[in-house]
Length: 112
Length: 114
Image (cartoon, rainbow over all chains, first blue to last red; front, top):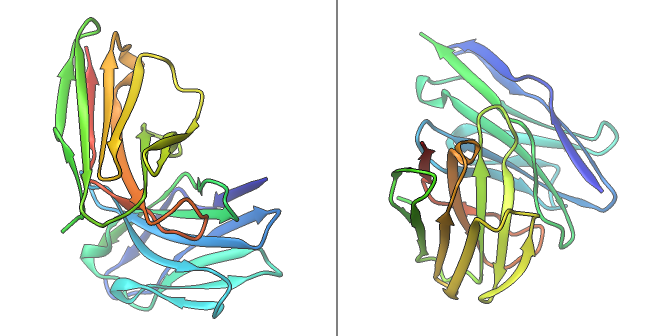
């Protein structure tokens, strides 16, 4: 069994300030973890993935996430938000050959 | 630019109509998926195809009928839909069905059932 919880439905930041989107997961297996981003009227795009290599994973557009097994967390961060980062972000967990389990999403709002 | 193309982008249909959604992937992937995205709900997996064979049907009503003629094309045939079926339908593909294979999504078809 597996599940994922995105702790915030909305996060608001100012342009140029850090971004933190929180994700906790549970999995019976050694998990694979992903972050996807969805801009309005678009499909989901892969930001980054963790598959038991380095615990700090770097993704596209300056995003990174850290896998913390002891905390069962996989939070997404970016040092400095840009207006173009405004979108919905999904944390996803998978174990073995199981299908992916998506979180409910976090809407990131970036103000000038 | 996405390697997964969905048509049409928008579709309005009455409850008695029959229509089809089309998906094509140009990534050489072996697995294809249909997902339903409704407001305020997590993404719902509908169907999975691996090497053209359906491997998962997530208790989807029979008014949704998938078809996968080859590894590059996926269809979703719709008939006698209900207003609650209005949603964004997303197609995705991946190299295989292992859990660490990332999905590549199309831009979706926005379906409105009147």
